[in-house]
Length: 191
Length: 300
Image 1 (cartoon, each protein chain N blue to C red):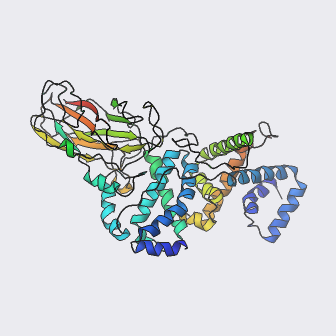
Image 2: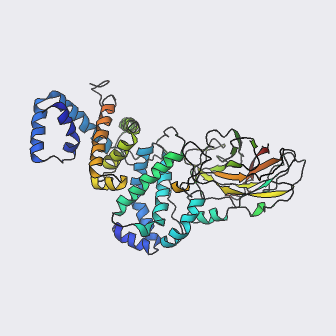
Image 3: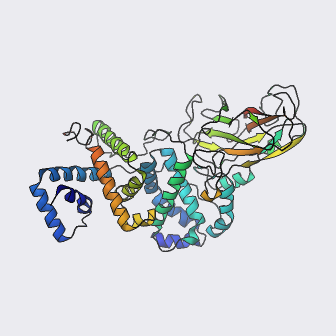
């Protein structure tokens, strides 16, 4: 059942339909928020608040896909969480029950898993160091694989601005990562 | 084609948004220019590395409000604007009702010595015990902490008066009560941070250590006794950046764990306001003892 059908049912008061929308999109919204904010607790807050806001505003949803609209709400929630949350250091990539909240490839052995984790942490750190505007555009485009049009809708900025921010964000990220021997082992400090 | 011009096309090349003519010239340039070819390789690998990041999984269940969306729109929006937003609630749809039912009252102690018996649960400690409860306007046994809540947080920066309480029979739980100052002027509002960090079910660290990042926050009952009067506590509205006492309802983000108490104008200097946060016995798990934290604010 596609999102639009679920949405129509949710608008008529079908909680199960809304729950299906939650189930379908919660992980990608959490991933986005985690990459934007760098903190699992804040990211989980963003997801919860996004769906609370979404539920109360279902009647207002027009002219966008459910997915793009949810990302738009989540971006706003991320800004709010960022404002009210004292900047906390990045938390480990595990929840308090010890569950890995980032999913490693089960086919990898221990060494490869450790390396993959090291790479992921290096990339996440480089993302966090990007200017916020560039980071948001880049995360939506390259982490969440939104189209440029969907990114423009989520960020409420013109398409050309999205492309410019993604381009510049990618450039800054590449400049940072090329210094990382974990990402570019041959570079040894960057060429 | 100059190097910087080719660099400008890196992003569009990755997105395959170059026209056929642009793509041909771009490729020709890379074939002839080592610097651009190397830079484009780094750029492309960086983008691929970001795209290959593992996707994360929402670590806790999302709470879906009760009621139809249209009703929620009319009824809950106002509630959200006034109360801390319920989030990260593993227990499900009872949370909003719990928020609405939360009883948060503060009484003011006038001229009393710091500390008196506070009747807020079976095991509430006697904090001094030299003056019995007077004019209590709350019914502690009926107080239900607001189980809706946020991820547990710390008092805002600048909150210098902090009390924390733990109990061995409540592993991993930590009740924190804090104010920015131990004094207040008549007519002013005192911002109170009161919050129980409650580990998510099955995640309590043994021995009651510091709350982990994904602990849930619970708004405790606030009670004080006084000879004269009782004051209601209001949830603090949205917090402006860098100023926990400032509000801006247009932002729509409630302040987590923060309440305000207004000291009535004309309150004599020397009046001691006792603020006690209580988690009643048996909450949330039957058999758990009550947990309290207390501090005072003196009117000057």
